[in-house]
Length: 62
Image (cartoon, rainbow, N blue to C red; front, side, top):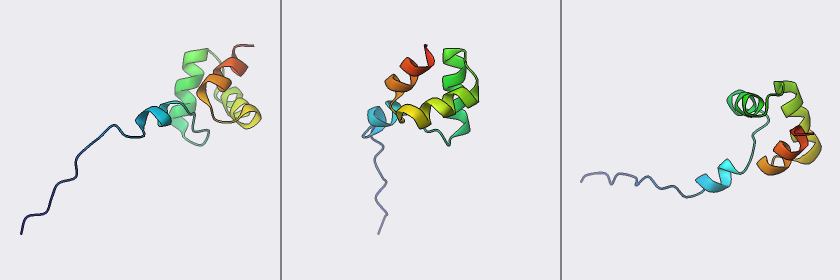
């Protein structure tokens, strides 16, 4: 009996992109490079306003 292969879907991907994972080094680095701020500034912004990408970018734009 052959094992069924799992189908790859994009489910949940859009939700995931709408957030910044403050504990993930690559996500913090990406956001820092994108906004021209330091990684610690990104982490502080995530702590202050939450992990919503739009809110974090708005906070860093100040």
